[in-house]
Image (cartoon, rainbow, N blue to C red; front, side, top):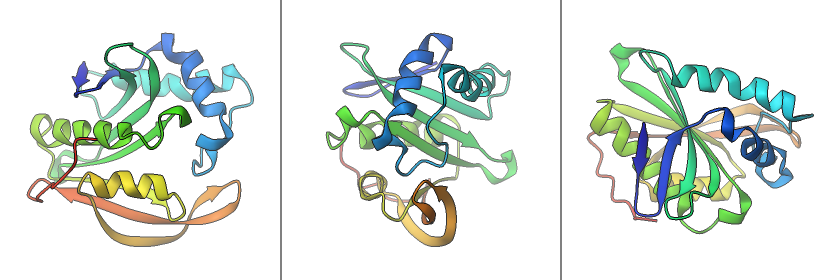
Length: 183
């Protein structure tokens, strides 16, 4: 499965992505607001992504993990996840992680908009939500530019290196006006 936008291709990750994902997860800048932590070695990264790859291959996928690539160069620039909730609730949750060389250039918003389209148009979701650390201003900007609404604040939900962080809760409904930008 592949999703395309004007500058990006999102494709399901596989074992060939291990080195690129390890580099992404090893960057202190991308780890600042991530509860995953920096992997000790490539073997640890392999054990982290193995269930993601397996989930991508299930007959009825409940959790998608995409590699984000520039469409022209096929350069790996990050990861994007969409985890589905119980069918009855038609809900999903998104997460993403971009290489710092691609921050501030609209790639995160573009990828999020494409996954929102996929979730609402192809998967028939009613609600897509996301969370982010209250100090993660870049991610807050991405979520809001894509039309997601801040619904609340969870106190000390995220165990970050800097200590426990509050988490902003965001969501968008299939019926919301997405008034979004292309990048």
